[in-house]
Length: 104
Image (cartoon, rainbow, N blue to C red):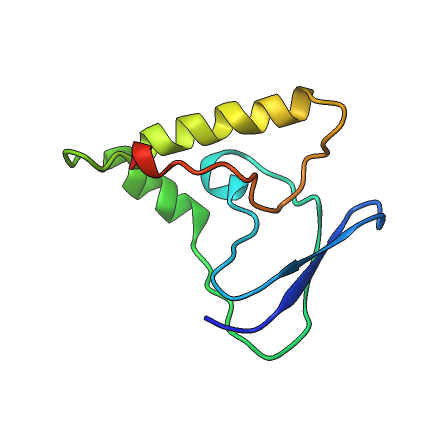
C-alpha cells in the first residue's frame, strides 16, 4: 500500500501523518471501539481494511505453536487500558507505539 493520510483527533487539536505501511484503528480488532478522530487521504493510495468480526472469529480459534494472535490482543488491550488511565496521553485511533513481535 502507498499514499499519505492525516489523522485528526476528535477535538481537532492535533494532526498526525500516516505513510505507507502504517496503520490506524487497530483497537477495533481487539475490543468494542468508537473511533476517536478522522482519517483523511492527502494523496492517492490504497487502504487495506479488515472485517473486525471475521478477524476476531479467526483469531479466537487460531492454534499454532509460536504464533498466538490472542496473546498479542491481550497485551495490546492491557496497554490500551493503561493509556486510558493516563491523563497525559489521549486515546486515539493511532498505533500505540508498542512492539509486540515477541508475542506472535
